[in-house]
Length: 429
Image (cartoon, rainbow, N blue to C red):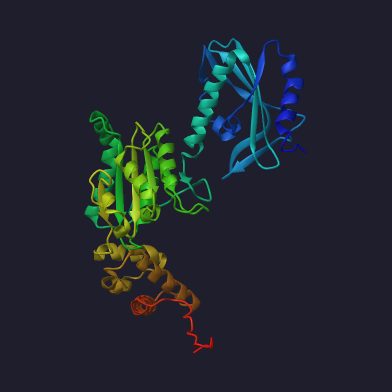
């Protein structure tokens, strides 16, 4: 087993013995980026990619290395880094011989990255051009363009199956949001550039929990992917939590994407804490925003707009538009949503509860339907009765009212143990 101190030495000695000694020209060993041995990234290097001096990339092959056990690392079912030796070929644009470079990648016992390449001294610049392209592909997540790419999450990407038809909003509001997104990508980016402005637009979706903000983001993401746009989702789910640097990292990745990019940030207020507020102001102003010539649209959500600094909320240009996502207001929308969640169990008389759904968020309707279906199945009902649906509705209303009453009564109380007082002699009173 290679030790942490001797990994680079053993690989270097192997390169000198097994490869450099057989080469007719001067060779150099250099530390390179592990992006060069990322199999998914290599699949996206353009065919015959030009690296300068009339040379083009001509492919690679895996080869044997005496000091490394070859293996492929997978992430999200995609081949990632290859550990072992790889021989890269470069040719003249007309197919004449160019040069070769041998790469060896490994980890030491502390999981430190170690990737060395043996390159002809006369061709270090073409190799560095190739390395830069591999880095660009990894940094722009090219291998994940068919899915929503995650920054700061537990996984690297996810698929979204939500269609805009699944999102129930007032018709005018829904149309306004879609038109804002489409007009920016279709015409707005060019207008921003003509005005010498960074094509960076920011929208905020605000509303109480359960009104469908997350579903709307999912539907917009699916629509953007279908149009060939890049979609990035900023997540607070990993150990770092909701930290501002994740938003900046997402915007940095977007700036290198060479395609229109949609960036989604849920619960924006969670990222605005401490020094992050000042940093966010600079990013929203555009002064510290990485530049994507193809346009970046940031859509953020919040359940608590009152917790967002007024310098963000009330300054035009920091948030270009704020859309308030309301509870259900239209009986047709409420009926359609209830019917969707009940599916095959829907009966015409179920519409009787629709007026009682108004003023409630979509998540409320979903819970009414799911709990009613569960009760019907538990009671072995052949079909969902109106009585069972009403019972589900009223039990949820009662639960919400009980919770609200509890919070109201205990709002000013300190929860926890109340320390007992001690008498003058130290005894408890």
